[in-house]
Image (cartoon, rainbow, N blue to C red):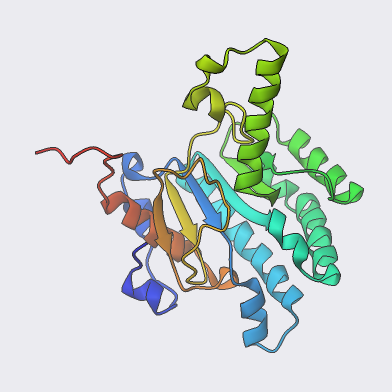
Length: 258
């Protein structure tokens, strides 16, 4: 997972590379592991929840930037299934922040014609949060722009296990021949069924981990890591990631043309 000198230094990059990148060289689907909210706050002597609050501003900027670049899908890792181990007060604040985001961002989502999708488990989420999510998803259903997919209470291993269970139940019911199961059929049982696989996976805060995110879907994604903490992540950082993606040769296990 190579980083650029500007990324390694954690500096704010300048310029706007992506708009100059030919549309055919841009990724259709960008997935982002948003990391570093807590460290951002601790570096400033603030409570961790202030980092999450600032992180929402980055979500807003990056969502709008991707929509205007013509990116087909943006997937954001908002809350992993493992995050429930965090302190109750922090989790309560995250649920409140998610509910608030779902209400306050409706104008932006409608203006940019953004569709909303959710992946992950609903159980464990507060009813008020789920109601706000469902209302926003419904309001945006007819939009024809970028799809914004939010991974909430999501884990890649759990998603794969659930897909295997669905196929096993169909086989037991006699509606599916086990010999007919292939990658396409398996993918159709995942939370992301019908979505393009990510072309570019971005991780902030310099961490070199996948963290149980889209394990099946990122098989051939290009990886790009920056030391920038998520609240400091700007449109220029994303432009740099897109420019790096456009410069790479994607062979999907084959050989480069001679």
